[in-house]
Length: 216
Image (cartoon, rainbow, N blue to C red; front, side):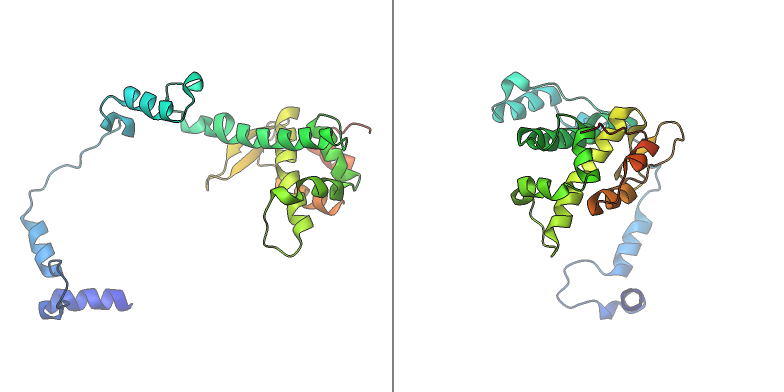
Protein backbone atom coordinates (compact mmCIF):
# COMPACT_ATOMS: atom_id res chain seq x y z
CA UNK A 1 0.00 0.00 0.00
CA UNK A 2 0.98 3.66 -0.26
CA UNK A 3 1.79 4.01 3.46
CA UNK A 4 4.01 0.92 3.49
CA UNK A 5 5.79 2.09 0.34
CA UNK A 6 6.48 5.53 1.80
CA UNK A 7 7.90 4.00 5.00
CA UNK A 8 10.16 1.71 3.02
CA UNK A 9 11.40 4.71 1.01
CA UNK A 10 12.24 6.58 4.22
CA UNK A 11 14.17 3.57 5.55
CA UNK A 12 16.23 3.13 2.40
CA UNK A 13 16.44 6.79 1.43
CA UNK A 14 16.76 9.05 4.51
CA UNK A 15 16.86 12.09 2.21
CA UNK A 16 13.22 11.42 1.37
CA UNK A 17 12.28 12.51 4.90
CA UNK A 18 9.82 15.42 4.77
CA UNK A 19 11.68 18.73 4.92
CA UNK A 20 9.51 20.25 7.65
CA UNK A 21 8.96 17.09 9.68
CA UNK A 22 10.43 17.67 13.15
CA UNK A 23 10.35 13.96 14.04
CA UNK A 24 13.50 11.85 13.64
CA UNK A 25 13.75 9.89 10.43
CA UNK A 26 12.80 6.23 10.60
CA UNK A 27 16.40 5.04 10.30
CA UNK A 28 17.30 7.31 13.23
CA UNK A 29 14.47 5.86 15.30
CA UNK A 30 15.55 2.30 14.50
CA UNK A 31 19.13 3.11 15.49
CA UNK A 32 17.92 4.65 18.75
CA UNK A 33 15.86 1.57 19.57
CA UNK A 34 18.83 -0.69 18.90
CA UNK A 35 20.89 1.27 21.43
CA UNK A 36 18.38 0.74 24.25
CA UNK A 37 18.96 -2.03 26.80
CA UNK A 38 16.78 -5.13 26.51
CA UNK A 39 14.59 -5.41 29.61
CA UNK A 40 11.58 -7.47 30.60
CA UNK A 41 8.15 -5.93 30.16
CA UNK A 42 6.77 -4.81 33.50
CA UNK A 43 3.42 -6.39 34.39
CA UNK A 44 1.16 -4.40 36.71
CA UNK A 45 -2.17 -5.89 37.78
CA UNK A 46 -3.27 -3.16 40.16
CA UNK A 47 -6.44 -1.21 39.23
CA UNK A 48 -5.94 2.16 37.58
CA UNK A 49 -7.20 3.83 40.76
CA UNK A 50 -3.92 2.83 42.45
CA UNK A 51 -2.18 5.47 40.32
CA UNK A 52 -4.13 8.22 42.08
CA UNK A 53 -2.81 9.28 45.47
CA UNK A 54 -5.51 9.38 48.17
CA UNK A 55 -8.07 7.89 45.77
CA UNK A 56 -10.86 7.64 48.37
CA UNK A 57 -10.45 11.31 49.26
CA UNK A 58 -10.52 12.33 45.60
CA UNK A 59 -13.74 10.32 45.10
CA UNK A 60 -15.32 12.08 48.08
CA UNK A 61 -14.25 15.44 46.68
CA UNK A 62 -15.73 14.78 43.23
CA UNK A 63 -18.98 13.36 44.59
CA UNK A 64 -19.41 16.31 46.94
CA UNK A 65 -19.20 18.67 43.97
CA UNK A 66 -22.28 17.03 42.43
CA UNK A 67 -24.40 18.17 45.35
CA UNK A 68 -25.32 14.61 46.29
CA UNK A 69 -23.51 14.16 49.55
CA UNK A 70 -26.37 12.16 51.04
CA UNK A 71 -26.16 9.58 48.25
CA UNK A 72 -22.40 9.30 47.96
CA UNK A 73 -20.89 5.85 48.27
CA UNK A 74 -17.29 4.78 48.14
CA UNK A 75 -16.59 3.43 44.68
CA UNK A 76 -15.35 -0.11 44.44
CA UNK A 77 -14.39 -2.27 41.44
CA UNK A 78 -17.08 -4.53 39.95
CA UNK A 79 -16.06 -7.94 38.58
CA UNK A 80 -16.44 -8.02 34.81
CA UNK A 81 -18.84 -10.98 35.05
CA UNK A 82 -21.18 -8.90 37.24
CA UNK A 83 -21.44 -5.82 35.00
CA UNK A 84 -24.51 -7.06 33.12
CA UNK A 85 -26.48 -8.00 36.23
CA UNK A 86 -25.41 -5.07 38.41
CA UNK A 87 -25.07 -2.17 35.97
CA UNK A 88 -26.39 -2.64 32.43
CA UNK A 89 -29.41 -4.81 33.22
CA UNK A 90 -30.79 -2.61 36.02
CA UNK A 91 -30.57 0.42 33.72
CA UNK A 92 -32.74 -1.31 31.11
CA UNK A 93 -35.08 -2.56 33.84
CA UNK A 94 -35.53 1.00 35.11
CA UNK A 95 -36.24 2.18 31.57
CA UNK A 96 -38.85 -0.55 31.13
CA UNK A 97 -40.63 0.33 34.38
CA UNK A 98 -40.64 4.00 33.42
CA UNK A 99 -42.57 2.98 30.30
CA UNK A 100 -44.96 0.86 32.37
CA UNK A 101 -45.65 3.62 34.91
CA UNK A 102 -46.38 6.21 32.22
CA UNK A 103 -48.63 3.82 30.31
CA UNK A 104 -50.41 2.91 33.53
CA UNK A 105 -50.89 6.57 34.42
CA UNK A 106 -52.83 7.02 31.17
CA UNK A 107 -54.75 3.78 31.78
CA UNK A 108 -53.24 1.99 28.80
CA UNK A 109 -52.22 -1.00 30.95
CA UNK A 110 -51.91 -2.28 34.47
CA UNK A 111 -48.75 -1.60 36.46
CA UNK A 112 -46.76 -4.61 35.23
CA UNK A 113 -44.31 -5.46 32.46
CA UNK A 114 -46.50 -8.23 31.09
CA UNK A 115 -49.52 -5.93 30.93
CA UNK A 116 -47.50 -3.39 28.94
CA UNK A 117 -46.48 -6.12 26.49
CA UNK A 118 -50.16 -7.03 26.17
CA UNK A 119 -50.63 -3.65 24.46
CA UNK A 120 -48.41 -4.82 21.59
CA UNK A 121 -50.02 -8.25 21.31
CA UNK A 122 -53.48 -6.66 21.20
CA UNK A 123 -52.39 -4.32 18.41
CA UNK A 124 -52.70 -1.20 20.57
CA UNK A 125 -49.08 -0.13 20.09
CA UNK A 126 -50.02 3.20 18.43
CA UNK A 127 -51.59 4.24 21.75
CA UNK A 128 -48.13 4.12 23.31
CA UNK A 129 -46.67 6.13 20.46
CA UNK A 130 -49.03 8.96 21.38
CA UNK A 131 -47.51 9.04 24.89
CA UNK A 132 -43.82 8.69 24.03
CA UNK A 133 -43.56 10.21 20.55
CA UNK A 134 -42.02 13.48 21.77
CA UNK A 135 -39.52 11.76 24.11
CA UNK A 136 -37.50 10.11 21.36
CA UNK A 137 -35.82 11.86 18.46
CA UNK A 138 -35.52 9.70 15.38
CA UNK A 139 -34.38 10.60 11.89
CA UNK A 140 -36.08 7.61 10.25
CA UNK A 141 -39.10 8.26 8.08
CA UNK A 142 -41.25 5.73 9.90
CA UNK A 143 -41.08 7.29 13.35
CA UNK A 144 -43.99 5.24 14.68
CA UNK A 145 -42.13 1.99 14.06
CA UNK A 146 -38.97 3.44 15.62
CA UNK A 147 -40.83 4.50 18.77
CA UNK A 148 -42.56 1.12 19.09
CA UNK A 149 -39.23 -0.68 18.80
CA UNK A 150 -37.66 1.68 21.36
CA UNK A 151 -40.45 0.75 23.79
CA UNK A 152 -40.82 -2.97 23.06
CA UNK A 153 -37.16 -3.94 23.48
CA UNK A 154 -36.62 -2.93 27.15
CA UNK A 155 -40.09 -4.18 28.11
CA UNK A 156 -39.39 -7.61 26.64
CA UNK A 157 -35.86 -7.86 28.05
CA UNK A 158 -36.99 -6.88 31.55
CA UNK A 159 -39.99 -9.23 31.40
CA UNK A 160 -37.76 -12.16 30.43
CA UNK A 161 -35.52 -11.55 33.43
CA UNK A 162 -38.45 -10.91 35.81
CA UNK A 163 -40.10 -14.16 34.74
CA UNK A 164 -36.97 -16.11 35.66
CA UNK A 165 -36.62 -17.57 32.19
CA UNK A 166 -33.72 -15.28 31.32
CA UNK A 167 -30.80 -13.52 32.95
CA UNK A 168 -28.78 -10.47 32.02
CA UNK A 169 -25.49 -11.08 30.21
CA UNK A 170 -23.21 -9.35 27.70
CA UNK A 171 -22.14 -10.55 24.29
CA UNK A 172 -18.47 -10.69 23.21
CA UNK A 173 -19.10 -7.28 21.60
CA UNK A 174 -20.41 -5.96 24.94
CA UNK A 175 -24.03 -5.68 23.83
CA UNK A 176 -26.48 -6.38 26.62
CA UNK A 177 -28.20 -9.71 25.98
CA UNK A 178 -30.60 -12.04 27.78
CA UNK A 179 -29.56 -15.65 28.28
CA UNK A 180 -32.06 -18.49 28.55
CA UNK A 181 -31.50 -19.77 32.09
CA UNK A 182 -32.24 -23.41 31.22
CA UNK A 183 -30.61 -23.69 27.79
CA UNK A 184 -27.78 -21.22 28.51
CA UNK A 185 -28.22 -19.65 25.07
CA UNK A 186 -28.95 -16.11 23.96
CA UNK A 187 -32.67 -15.50 23.51
CA UNK A 188 -33.39 -13.92 20.12
CA UNK A 189 -34.97 -10.79 21.54
CA UNK A 190 -34.80 -8.84 18.27
CA UNK A 191 -36.86 -11.41 16.36
CA UNK A 192 -39.63 -11.18 18.94
CA UNK A 193 -39.38 -7.39 19.09
CA UNK A 194 -39.96 -7.35 15.32
CA UNK A 195 -43.19 -9.31 15.82
CA UNK A 196 -44.30 -7.09 18.69
CA UNK A 197 -43.76 -3.95 16.64
CA UNK A 198 -45.70 -5.26 13.68
CA UNK A 199 -48.49 -6.64 15.86
CA UNK A 200 -47.81 -10.22 14.82
CA UNK A 201 -46.67 -11.50 18.23
CA UNK A 202 -49.06 -13.77 20.09
CA UNK A 203 -49.52 -14.97 23.64
CA UNK A 204 -47.98 -18.27 22.53
CA UNK A 205 -44.85 -16.52 21.22
CA UNK A 206 -44.23 -14.93 24.61
CA UNK A 207 -45.20 -18.04 26.54
CA UNK A 208 -42.58 -19.95 24.55
CA UNK A 209 -39.87 -17.77 26.12
CA UNK A 210 -41.44 -17.90 29.58
CA UNK A 211 -43.48 -14.67 29.68
CA UNK A 212 -47.17 -15.13 30.50
CA UNK A 213 -49.43 -12.25 29.57
CA UNK A 214 -52.46 -11.33 31.69
CA UNK A 215 -55.98 -11.29 30.35
CA UNK A 216 -57.03 -7.64 30.01
